[in-house]
Amino acid sequence: MAQLAPLKIKVPGEREFVEADKAREFVALWTEQLAAHRQEVQAILGDNATEGELGNVVLCDRIRLSDKSFSDEAADVIAAFLKEPFMGGRSIASGILYAELDDIIAGRMTEMGLHVLQTICDAFAEAELVDVNLSDNAIGQQGIGACKTVLSKPSLERLALCNNGLSEATMEEVADILTHDESGTGCVATNLTKIHFYNNMSGEGGCKQFARILEKSSKLTDIRFSSTRAGKAGSDIVASALDAALEEGRNTNLEKLDLCDNNFGNKASQDALFRALGCTTSLSYLDLRDCDLEDDGVKKVCHALFESDSALEHLDLSGNNVERRGAKQIADYIRDSGGKLKVLCLDDNDLTSKGVVHIASAFHGSEDGHAIEKLQLNYTMCGAIGARALIDAYGPDGKDLPNLKKICLDGNSFKEEIVGELQVAFDNKLVEMEENDSDGEADDDLSDEDSDEEDDDDEEDQNGEVDALTDAMNKSLVV
Image 1: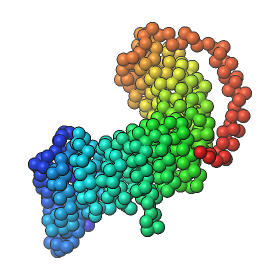
Image 2 (image 1 turned 120 degrees about the horizontal axis):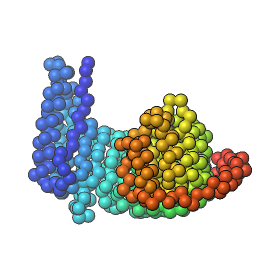
Image 3 (image 1 turned 60 degrees about the vertical axis):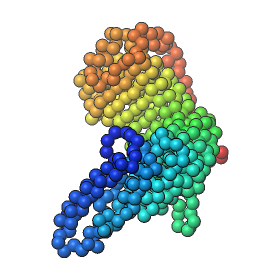
Image 4 (image 1 turned 120 degrees about the vertical axis):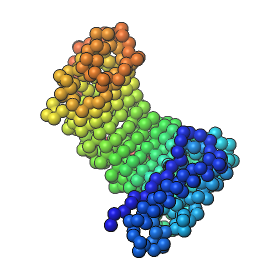
């Protein structure tokens, strides 16, 4: 028998403050939508369906309250609608699996914001929530307590707490909730497949609390822990926790890892990160932007990715002080990965044209053309030599990179002649270069002799460095 999928209800219109009267308009709209959906369900079930059968049908499993700032009274109206039996059947809240509760208290005073958060979150007491987004709400320790009803759901699998201003103390409370196991049957963290913490201010202490969550996790496929003011010490803790989890056989199906804006400048954290990445056989997305890796760290990352044999599609190593030597390691990885990479971001690195030549050369040789769709090389000290290497890699009419959709080369140094060549070759795939230095002097200090010497050094060190990297995988990091 055909079945109708449950509806998603959402607040319509632009971002706004919502008072009680506006909330009643939302409720009236939802009631109309849900009643119509109920009639369709009844038609499918047929005349023999009992009121009990119809009343147990889940009419709605998703709700989006995002980008509205609710008053106390408006929150009360919304919560009452969600909790009450709908047309004699189950409550709407009881069937909700996906709750988008991000940015719902903007501009509200603390006391009012806490009331709104608790009122809305408590409305889902009967729900078996799977996916909760509480991002963009200014949540302090009291705010976490107000959200405890949704954060402590054993059914929870995906959680986002981004741009909440979470402090060290607040992160401790989050960790307490997610790792609490009163019955001995497992905690919330054990069941999580996605956890996102971004743009908070939890510092080194917050990293310790995040490590507590990772210690209890086993099913994570999507991790984002970025821009949290971790510092070197905190980043060491995060790298060590990831390493330990994967070494113990937990989170081995990790697909997406975003550690942007941490600081993995220490050898210890680089080695831990190297070991962790070497175990991620399912990884498809890796963001290590602004992580202070430099050439040595990038080499370890590329070697680990090669060892893991994951089908990586997105790699961001921007802002890591990568120079020509590091570019060569990235190029080797691209070449060895078999043309699977779709997005490569290397912005804000001192690659120079020689480094860009290495990258461009990696796209040659695939019989069916490389999979690359987006290539970002903004602010990489690239000049004419690098530009022409990219044009050559693209091939006539793009036949060598048939999947390329966008190439970004802003903030480099191309004379008008080179800009023209790039425009002819890449056409509308070339993103506008508003910050281009038209003096075209980026290649003036390049020396073929210096380059040859560096290549010789790379060859001499290669065997020893590979042995050192392999040895690092077998050592444990103690923080």
